[in-house]
Each structure stands twice: as structure tokens, then as C-alpha cells.
Image (cartoon, rainbow, N blue to C red; front, side, top):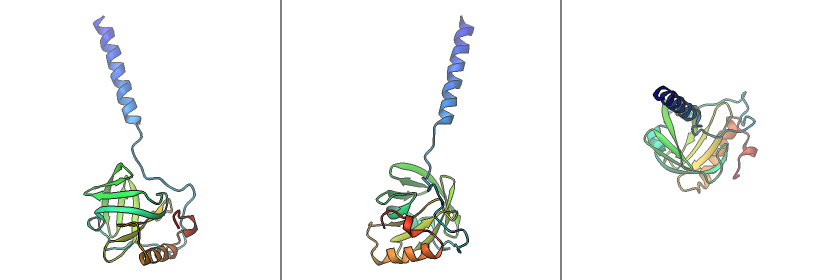
Length: 157
């Protein structure tokens, strides 16, 4: 009897561990069709550091992240609409969020507005500290256009 209970208990434990391993982890949403022309030049802003991104942001335009989405960078984590994801500074304005590489294409001198995208075109967004970037929105859009992103596919525009 003890052997049967141990076998059943062990099988149950393995099943639970297996299910826990299959649980989906939060990840960044992506566009179904790439958002960027791969023949366009692309670069990141070398002085855009994780320290400069710390704090609260609101997406004002985007594809992959919707306008109104709230982001908060704290240490090595970013919370996007309640989902906490690991973030790692890869250097020169390039980051890994939940394993996906994202580049800061533009960050204004006062760290109020940023244009961030996946150079492969899976997602792109413009975020602002206040949610109202005014003329900085035009600058962010001009940079994204130069780097080949399809601005017509950004929601909130």
C-alpha cells in the first residue's frame, strides 16, 4: 500500500511540476506582419541608458503596444500594464526585455519622450512621461520614419 501511495504521489508531483513548467511567462506583444522596411538604415541612440528610462511612461502611439499602455522601469524590471518583465541593458541604447531585443531609436535630451522599436520590425512605440509629448511626437515620428517603420500602422496617430 505504501508503494502505491508513493508512486501515485510521485506521479502527481511530476504532473504538477510539468504543468508549472508549461505555464506561459509574460512576453511582449508583436505585430503579425513586420512594421519596418529591412532595407532602411537603422540605429540606436548610444547614450540612451536604462538609468535614463527609469520611472513611469505612457505609450502615446504604437504597434505591438497599444496607446495608453503604462510602462514602469524600476531597476532590472519593466512593468507593462501590470506584467513584470526582466530588462537588461545590452549597451548603446539596446536592451533585452523578456529576451526580445529592443532599441531606443530616439530619446529627447530631458528624458521625456522615447521612440523604441524592434529593429526586425516586430513592434514599435513612442512613449512619454506625461502622455502628451507635443512637438516631441513629431521628432519621434520623423526618426521612426527615417528608420523605415510604417507609421500608418501605429495606433494612436
